[in-house]
Structures are given as C-alpha cells and as structure tokens.
Length: 469
Image (cartoon, rainbow, N blue to C red; front, side, top):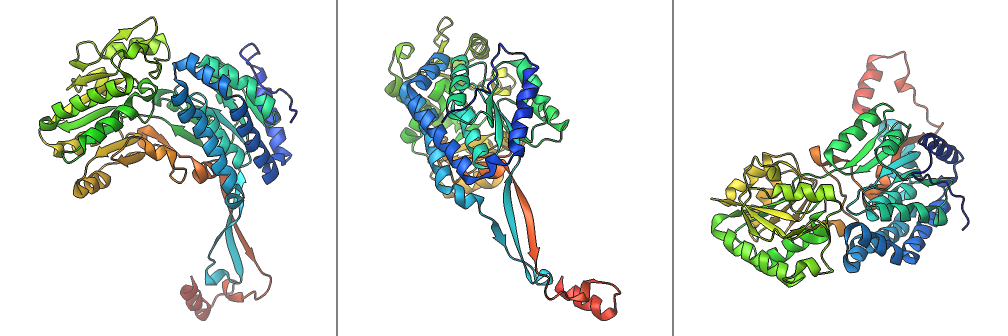
C-alpha cells in the first residue's frame, strides 16, 4: 500500500508534535479506523513489515543491545508475529457485542456491551525490548480501532530510527505516526490531549506520565517493574530450577522487567543452588562469556556504571568480570547483600543476582511482603501446600510456579503490574479491552409499557416494585 509519511524525526521542531496529534484526531473523527477491514489490513501490514524487515530489525537490536539473533528473534520478532496472528484470529469475535442478561424489571429488552475505540493513543516504548514493547501495544491499539503515536526509546537509537523509517512505509500514516527524540519530545507529547497513554518503563517516569495524563483526565496503562523475587523452596528440583533461573535472569543480560531480581533460599540449600546456577551459566554461555555471541551487553555507559556501582563492597561469589569499553558485565552472583544497599533497594535491571539465605523458608513470604508489590513473583517448589501459601499470601502482577517468565507466551493471560509495579494490563483480548471503551447498551421495546414505575405511586405499586427490583 502507498502511504504518506507522517513521522516526526528529531530534526523537526517540537511544535510539529501538536499538529501530528491533531491530524491523527481528525483521522479518527472520520471513522475510518473503526471498520474491521481497516484493522485487519493494518495488522496484516504490520506482520508483513516484521517479516520482510527482520534482518534489519535483528541488526538494529544487535547494535543497541548486543542481542544474538536467536534471542532477538524469539523475544521480539517471533513474539510480535505470534501476537499479530492471535489477534487476527480472534478480532471479529472481540468486536462483537457482548450480551448480558436483562432483569425482569427491564423486560422486554436486551442488554450488551459494545467495544468502541478510545481515540488517539500515545505508546511510549522501552529500550530493553525496543521493538516488541512498541509494537505489542500497537497491535492492541489497532485491533481496538485507534489511531496512535509511537514514541520509541532514544536509548535504543538504531531500533528507534528503523521504526521511524518502517512504519510510514507499511502502515496508514494518517492514523499511525512515529515521534523520535528524548526528554523534550516526550514532554511535548505528554502535553497533548490523548485518549489513552501506554507507558513501559520505570517508576520515576511512570509518575511523570501519570501527572501529565491527569491534566487531561487521560487514562493510563503503566507497565513498570520492581524487584521481582524468586523463592526456592527445599523440595524444588535444583537442576531444573537452576536452568530456569539462569535463562530468565540472564536473557538480554538481565535487562528484562520480569527477570528475577533476587533469590530467597534456605542456608542449608544455598551452596547447592549456587553451584547449580554456576554450572548452568557455563553450560549456556561457556567459560569465556565476554566472547560468547549469545550473551548481550549493557545498553549504555550510564547503566553500566550504575550496575558496576552496585557491586562495590559486595560479596561477589561468582562472576563480576566487566569491560567498560564494550559494556560487558558477566553473570554475577552476590551472596547475602546488605538489605539497605542500593543493590537491594533499587530494581537491578542487569546481570547481577543477589542470593539471600534464610534460616527457614518460612521467612521468605514476610520478606517479600515487606517490599512494594513486584511485577512478577517466582516460586520453585514441589510442595503443594507451600505453593498455595505463596499464592494466597503474596501479591504480584504475575506469579509463575516452577519457571521463569513463561506466562508471557500465553496470550490468554493478561500481563500487567499491581501497586508500584504498574496498572492496567494487555496481551491478547486484554490488550484489545485496554484500548477500548466497553460501552453499555440497553435496547427496549415500545411494547408493554407497564405503568408501575410512573407516578402517581400507590402502596400496591410500591410493593410490586420492591419485589421486581
């Protein structure tokens, strides 16, 4: 399809942003985005873009984060394609009126919910998965019939630039625009009267987004993060547990919002667990990890300095090797860090794994509950009683028993945080609903207009109404 270029690059002035948003709102007002044909066409075009440009996408991800092709394809390209396919398969069903029962007092009549698009959405992506975290929300926004402004992360410049180039070549630029830039551009975007803002990132900026949204009473979805705990109970299969911890912790060099942030384990089991983790790290990445193409890099110098600063004065029992020039930081285990250290007070978002030893695993849940509610919680156990205890006594955006973030691959499960780890959710139908207003509709007949509800009221009328309502 041939589309006009409506993207805004960093070279263009801040003042152009308001016009871009205004143009998108005008497009939405025409109703063109509401048809199932437009939605399906845009999703199909997005799929074609992802397939045809995957070599360039992989190269950009490699440039920004040192992602190997297999990991980048699985977590970003393949994930996006699967999301599109699932959405296309179910789109017509999601768009249908959702019938509900009608009480006898409102008979004859019918009641239902009608999903209608919110309007024009702002999607602010994150740098750690700079392709997927822009397009997964866009898939939901398109499916729901919205226009959208995409703001890719400036911390992943190669991917951001590629997105700005690809989107107008494949998608309807009258309805979908890209704005590149940093703080100034994002600040200007947040001044605009969007109908929904979807932000993926950290808590600090999340608060800024929410304050800005409040000026226009704009609803927000905040996908944040936090310190996601990993509890290893004594009955767990340690070999499998170690493999799954290593996979989920050190994918993307630990720069994943749902990566396990710290491990809680009994002292009697800690040495065995740490040894098993070391064995799996070497099995996955070898002994010369700095030269292993399957292991990523820290996104920039600022984050590299932040992470290496966490290690000062800590008891590093494994890893710790680093190279500032290449922003390489090896998989690292810190044993029993000071609870008041920055390592344990801030979200790590990197390849450092604190292991906290306990006298009894019964101490784990109270320690988890002392902190803000995390985006994810992991528990490895074969004890059904303990499993239920974790599920009943903790709160997290998502909980996974006996694995890492495998819940992310199920489009039938919503993904989102709770408390400080975010609000709202998406994936599959949940994303469609996030970018929709479920409008209440009741339709009644002109027939059988019973006068019970109309004045004047009598004791008999009142008695009948009380029984009906």
